Length: 110
Image (cartoon, rainbow, N blue to C red; front, side):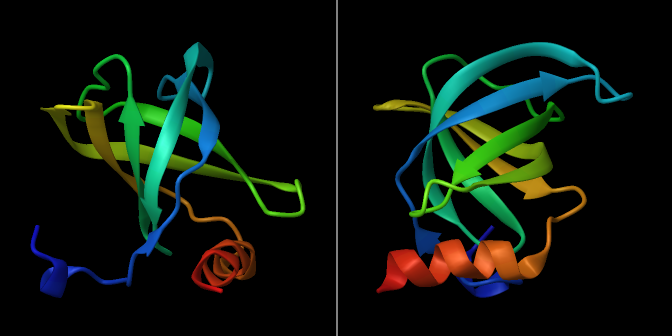
């Protein structure tokens, strides 16, 4: 998807984050650490050591600068292998309170 087709502006965000993979009933099926690449109100781009399949459901912990976590749920919409690992684009399935994501985005922009 081209940048001009995106619904939300992206903000670079490089953080080590815990991702928990879940099934359709949101029961844990696995977990791993990933690195966030960027964040918007609609989703997040991730880099992982292992491939993350398209359609995978996950719950991601994003730590704010204050250390307070924001928990988001999403579904992988696209994935590809890159030179630095495996990249995945995650769309938030039911976004958390918008104010929490705005705080992370604004802190990174400052």
